[in-house]
Amino acid sequence: MNKIFPLQMNTSDFLFLIGLVLVFALLFTMLDTSRRRKKFRLELPKIKTELQCISCGLKEIRDFQEDDYISKVTGEKCKKCGEDLKIIAIYTPPPKESTSK
Amino acid sequence: MDNIIIQQLPFGDESLFTILLFYIPFLLFLLYGQKIQFQMALIEIGGMLNRLERMRNIAKFETSNVLRKFAKDEKIVEPGLNSILESFMIMPESMDPAGIVKKVEHIVDVRQDKLLNQVKRLLKDELEMSKVRNIEIMVEATMALEIIYKVIRHFYLLAKKMGNLMLVIQLQMLLPLIYNEAKAYLSAVFAFKSGAPVGDGIGPLSVHKLLKGEESKRSMAKDTDVYETSLEGRRTYIVKASGPGGNVGKPSDAIGKIIEEDGNVKAVIMIDAALKLEGEKSGSVADGIGAAIGGIGVEKFKIEEVVTKYNIPIFAIVIKQSLPEAISVMNKNIVDAVEEVHNRVKKILVENTKEGDSVIIAGIGNTIGIP
Ligand SMILES: [Zn+2]
Image (cartoon, rainbow over all chains, first blue to last red):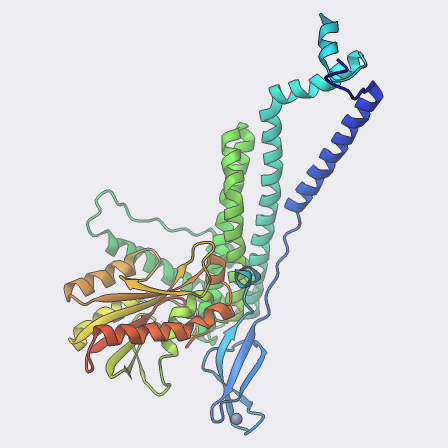
């Protein structure tokens, strides 16, 4: 007996061990379920509108405004030459997963 | 006998209590393992179901808010929206498949018209059409969420009632995928609300960027515009749905009409968004042969019919993206693909046609935010 299990344990040691395992198991389950049941949160990326001056080609990026669409001449004026600006692109920043790839 | 067992256990003490502590959980799991697993899975699915319900509620809330903002009469919005969400479509019988494409097309067209009219009736008469269309597709995305939620709830309640472990396990396996899809539809609701281009709009965006800006447009099919321009010395017809309202149009009808009218069309190039495989880079471009168009299959069938009849080669260029990307506001990776698409278009034109030939370039997809 002593040769196979050189480490002697008595009941209280054993109970303590089981208790420890139980506590850890409980902790992990709680952590896991709380992770899975985490309240669903909606994250909306910021939409950007890229404008370009129709005469000098100066580009400008601002936040998206309602009723923006591609090729719309918005009535905003170029900071350099005062000409009309035209929307050339509307986009959100690339998602995190695809940039890491 | 007892003593022998005790002596074989890895502890020195011989209390019966210890043995029970060791064996009872073992027996419990042996006999009731399945029941425990069933309950655990049920709890998990219940959590997911709550989230799906929350998503549906958010979508419904946003949609009815927008509807109320532009409504004729705020009181009719709630019952109106509910009746739209409850509406359904019955696909034609396919036991005798001859001529089924026409029937499917008819049913889908009627549904589309009815939905648009239902939405229009709720809104102020003077509201511009592009806004009405954006609200209409917002309602459609909400409908998708409503259906997902209802179906999952059905199976959840059924499994609970029957105590059916296999049903629960299947749900548990599928739910993460379904949940991702639902999340995509929810972000679609917000994209359509804003009126900004979505990832699926890369086809229309690419062809729009081929235009110089002074071409006049003709409406050659329902909700579909055709522009005439010149590319690499080829007479080029650009086909896209009419924007900037959310809309996919009927490119097949326009392509058919152009081919018959022009008589010298030597190539049809279709540009569309395609679902990427996990691990593929979004916004990467690939080209090939065939009719690149999704949906229920009617448009694809009609395009294939007409190009086969006139023996015209058909080329496809696809821009890869995930489902969530396709129905969320277009991201930078996808916008940046436009240049590569143009290179491929030019390459196909140079390699397969001569100067003076006519070609059709169709940008397939939802044209929201792209005129
Ligand atoms: Zn300028």
